[in-house]
Amino acid sequence: MIGFVNLFKAAGPSSARAVSRVRRIYALYAGDRKLGAGHLGTLDPQAAGVLPVAIGKATRLIPLLVDQRKSYVYTMVLGRSTTTQDSHGDTVEEQVPPSDWPQRLERALPNFVGRIQQAPPMYSAVRYQGRRLYQLAREGKVVERKPRSVTIYGLTLLGIEPSIDSGPKVARLRVACSEGAYVRTLCHDLGAAIGIPAHMGALVREASGPFIGYEARTLEEIAQAPERALIAPEHIIPFPTIVLDLRGSADFRAGRVVPLPEGATGKHVFVRDESRALVGVGEALGALLAPRKVFL
Image 1 (tube, rainbow, N blue to C red):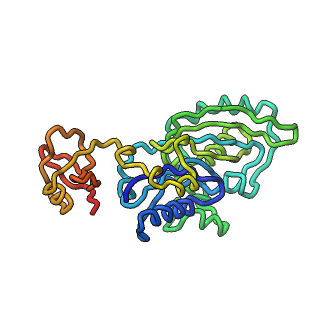
Image 2: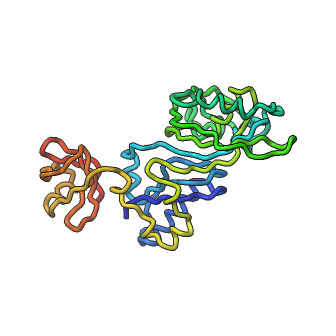
């Protein structure tokens, strides 16, 4: 079994737990206890939304996914910064936001569009000297993190949530960003730019590369019809597909270079055999086709 699943993860469970449940569904469906699965980009437990999952040998296709852009809708809470840069952390600083905070925020947004620098938060899976940053943070340690370049493709203020004078000040925003960008850190840095401590509230991932939110399925929907939730690799990765005859597919499976069928276009192609089973991914080398990933 090979393919992708567009999972809508609910807020609460970790990404690893959600993927484990999807894996069990397909392992039972395929009758294969050893069936593997992996996700394409972690969502924090409190976050919801699109969590793409690769099933079986589709995990080997993850590096071929060129489009790694992400899109989120989130809330930014002004007046308090935290150790985790979200609502679950301890308070670092508090301040009553001035009345003009919405105008300050809107003026600051264009400065965060484009290529920007972000220092990964301490509560993240980034490694530091062989250990995860969140492991160090749980021990009360804070280490210097080297800023990384990320791209913000779009950043839009969607609205301001009503609040009483003493209540929290909350803005709703949408961001489209590159892989590796932290929305929590974006909230923190935006707050710092306008002189008001801030943290991220709710977060929903609307899209991850070619996986779109309105097409995502819940765990319950996947369990009810696993075959309908499984997406063929060709529908996710835009490579053309070629079909090899019995001898050609046998040679390809054995790792041998085979003649490239006439009319084949593209540097990389999906290769299927006469029964239309997916054999692997090949690379065109002139008139020849070299195996790059082979599925036995």
